[in-house]
Image 1: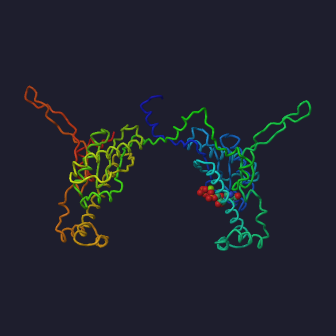
Image 2 (image 1 turned 30 degrees about the vertical axis):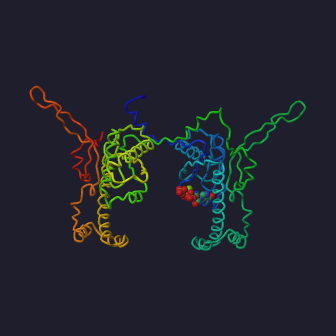
Length: 520
Ligand code: GTP
Ligand code: MG
């Protein structure tokens, strides 16, 4: 099926490769094991057979997947650490996670009878999983320490809890008894009420289980003089040791060994750090740009409140420049200090890489803003540089683009109405706090009445640009190029970038310009 016209659908598959030179931890966790453990009558709080079964599956994992350097398990969860150098399935997160849960689950079912010879599996066990990246060995160790501390805290609580329940308390009573108790107090309850010395409980319950490759020396044969010939071997080992302190790691330095070597003086691998941020195909792209610190910028340049026409004309002129420069922009909508640019669903601009598209737009817009400043605000010097932030949003349907734009226009109306009232109140002598209080909870109608009665302003007669914001788009206009011999005009359709302040919430504008958001 190579190169078929359907191949484009491949682009929908997101690239989920995990960043290189990071340790990967895949943690899997039994789904609904609360129920699973009670159906299969696991002992409370710890069922040795169930834990040994988990450990045996983890051990099978280390034997099967050489990229796993360490595993740590408690209760129904297991964490698998992959080396920072691992290139297993090109580090694709979903592949790794799915393989791990799948292999682990199969092992669990296969080995069940070995650990529970007298119990049939009454329902299928299954696990969920996730991958997390840790850039340094220190963070991996802190992660494992966190899990081991959790193991200790849960185990101590659960041991007390179930002893109290077994001694006749209800679950509620047991919970209340343990509420707010510290480690020491719990140990005392165990010792005094039940004669249990917490420290003497099995290490597996207190410390969880570590699975790793232990380097052991093995006698392979004896030479002629009877001396033993040894070989170092990696044996997958299960142990229940402290991994919070340094001792275990000092004794097994090769497990989480940070790689400082450089392969063949080859620096090319750093390229892999560049994340692919390609936006999905067949989606409309909306790039929203927004001025940074505009409140300060507008005060320093004494913009009129609430709307400075010249500042808005400047914004519109910059947006027009963008449409003229980038044919892939099919529509733009601006209000106040922000502008949204719509790219067609088929656009291949910058290979749809979000950061490239967004940065090109904010940069070009910023340039235009500075260049055109004097044209729109000739009596003012630019006292500081304006700058804009931007982001890209994907809309899978034309309808969603329209709803996005309608939302923006609706917002424009609401803010404009509020701000017009607010600044009229302030100009009439109220403090800003008083003005806010005056407007609190007022409805649209009330605001219009206030404007009319107190200030003689008819809101509906305010400039369309203030009330509706600005739309920038290509208008198709017919132009008479020449007259033919019979005197009949020969026309040509021209596209002119146009700024207008029209309603884009209702269907009218879109019906009149069906080519703008035309769904392919
Ligand atoms: P999800 O993981 O969100 O699907 O829920 P879950 O029911 O699996 O709970 P969670 O993973 O938070 O906790 C694991 C649960 O498994 C514990 O609360 C126990 O109910 C049960 N469990 C795990 N190990 C043992 C065990 O050795 N004995 C008993 N009796 N129960 C266990
Ligand atoms: Mg679980």
